[in-house]
Length: 544
Image 1 (cartoon, rainbow, N blue to C red):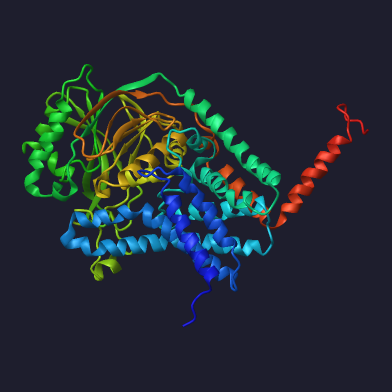
Image 2 (image 1 turned 60 degrees about the horizontal axis):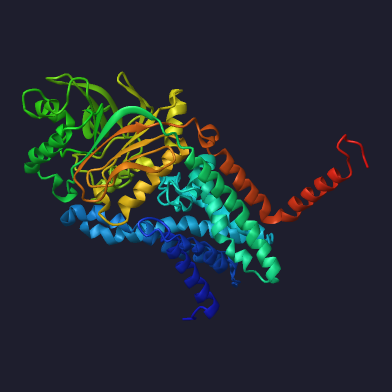
């Protein structure tokens, strides 16, 4: 067997290390210098090899393996909830998930290597790298139902000045900018005089400082008013491993009811329980005369609203039963409950809530992790919910918070922009390490993109109210906390540029990267020609 040359081993090791470093920029680590790992990845891709495309694809795959092994390490946790049934899948889940997602980076690196044959040099190769990998991240967020977990553009702490760039170009556009900025040291340190290197650093820092200054101004201008209504978020800290034991339902319901009834200086208009709050199908709990419905009704004052994540059953189109992961909105009447609205989760988690190719998978013994007789059925395309007593809001259940443009698309479909977003999630599936904090960070980016406040409820943490700049406001219930959050809903902003234009600006950035792949000289020539033409004319348009 022929061993790879030392230079190939060094390049592969650098790519793997770069991916790990970049992943450490995300919560709970927050090591932002780790973003320089992208410069290390670009350096690795620049190393010559006898078979450039093959070497680039392998190095890109190694970079992705390092990045996703850290980013999705929490993926083993859902399989350990029912360890006897699913525990054997945990190591395979991490290996297959990290290795599979890395294929997107392998394709990006190979595409970049192909473009390199057109010889983009200097700063152009940085933007080609940014375009190739940002394009791969967009594909990761859309192909095979999509899984946009920890996009590089979401590495900046949500609510910080640089994170506000998502309001301009969305998380994918900010990913392009982040990759360009993070990979720039590979160009800055290219051979050259100290003065030239300083000029390169200035060329990178100036646009970054402009974005930072704009983001600081945007955060400072966050609307301070209150849009109302008053919100109560309930967090009961119910562990996922014991939740579904039938004997635990009465005690779990009692905890939620007691927290809902907790006295407050000002009674809440709406109480929020998290995704799948109770270990039962809501249809069974709503049957009159069995005590469950009466217990729920007793927790609400007349006119008070309860928005609860619940598992729901209805007649299916084939005569069977369809199960939904839903947000059910109930209104108290004093002695009973009225169903005021229902939202069925549209984007389901592959393998968690449904099995792709379900019949085939079932024959080989695979089934989803949900505690239902059958997999969940996706609901219709999302639209804002409009209730008589509340401003219109967009429900967003768990996994749906990963997707940039989710609320924008729903609003365009309905012809109405909501006033806020209600995100219920069961982050108990993610354990108590990195998953819940990363999920919270991504949800906060949806607030920045849309310019809307978010009310976020989870059973075990982290629950919070998020303002339109992505900042946490008031009380935050962390991992393992039991309690309630009582505060008014923050005000919304006018529609952001991202709401108006969507991923259009991101597409423009990709086109710039593609054009620069082999035609940097054309861009420079056009710029110089236009500038020289301007120099030959006076202000009145006469030729000098």
